[in-house]
Image (cartoon, rainbow, N blue to C red; front, side, top):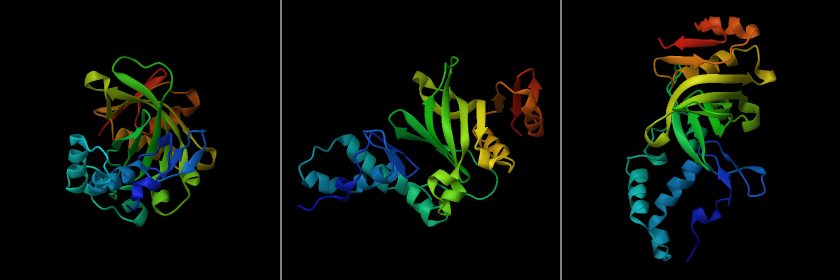
Length: 238
């Protein structure tokens, strides 16, 4: 019997859910098929896998229905603008920052994405306060990626965030606070910092807590309407 398309997917230790790259078992970073696309293709191939004698669970059948009939997954999403958007399966809107969708990237990592930016990674950094998880993300310019810019050149910087935890300490898409933001040197002075903060604010509830405000950055935070007290601040959500 002819092999299935999914048989040709890269054998990786980590695969990005949205961004087309992964990490090999030897630790090298390589371009790879996004996880969302892999899952959708595997769901469509379910009948063929059954014919090959693979064990198919009830969960596999349910996931296939969700992926192919509009209940969730890549194929149920609205088709965004641009070919790259169609490949990655992100809902693309145009206008102000929209709330970012949270995706499981595997290996304990996560990704956030909307029409403007992508936060990729979710690596735990430092200790976390009760009810939140402190995670670090690389920030990418989605619009540049959509236009065909190579992934490394679309990177805007990094940010450390506190994400709220739900029942059973499960990660939610609500951002409680911003601990650090580091804009890449070649992106500074172009409004990128403001752009990143506004997108992060879209995933806050009533507002965004800002931790460890440095003296030299006070003007930046004040320009965003931050209520500052000592080294901490709060940006109310309007």
